[in-house]
Length: 315
Picture 1 (cartoon, helix red, strand yellow):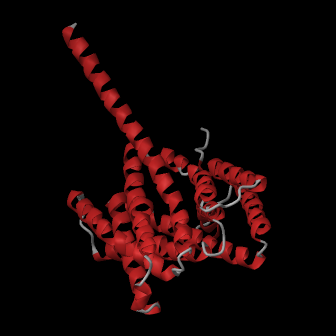
Picture 2 (picture 1 turned 90 degrees about the horizontal axis):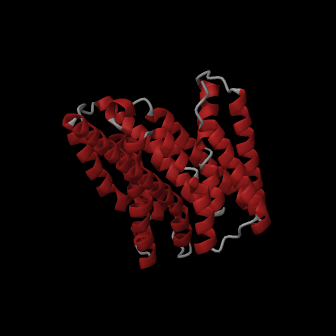
Picture 3 (picture 1 turned 120 degrees about the vertical axis):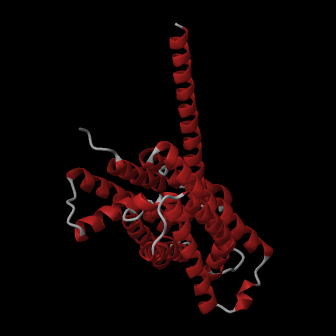
């Protein structure tokens, strides 16, 4: 009886530890979603001080680079597989598409559209993965996927209509939407390439080193496109860039990576649906962005479409 009781006690202890780990993972996933959502708000706030996209992106990446290098070094010590030259090439390509180009197009687009619309368009990346897979990899689009695509893009249409109504500048809204959509395409390509290496090298190490390459690309871009005098920015710009690096770049990357380790990719991807809602609220609170019925309806449709898309098939 004593042995049985001890065994049960041990099993209860293991279950409690697992449940605690899952609760921490959920907290990390939500915090990561909040951090990523806050990025657009920080960018829009920084633009009020007259900084351009290239300078702001370079500052964000320069502040982020030491942390990513540290995370990569820690992941490398813990890894069982050493990086080859081909692996480093993959890291550079993933950094180019997944973080550098995606970030640059996103920063450019935020000069034209609201933070809420930007987050909704970026949230479409799963639909782009499906479309690219169908066009170039021959993967069929099922009826459920087609319905999800239709719902999502109708929702985006409603959200775009809201921005057009608020700003009245059709050309600017369309330019901004095009740039942010290009960011979503770039990120979708990153995800497709990411699957080729992350299983062997580990998600944390891939994210850290790909992000490090993106930081280097962004800094080189600034050196080529802007004079060093462009670094003479108000202290508020530096503060916002540092906050962007800590709370909307490095922090969320680590938090989401830890959340996936504890919960798995599926549950963590569901917490990402909080992103558009969080950004709408923060845009209203900190940027005085208007909230309208069509915007809320469009947001609900986009989230519904993505949820349909990522929901596991019933067996």
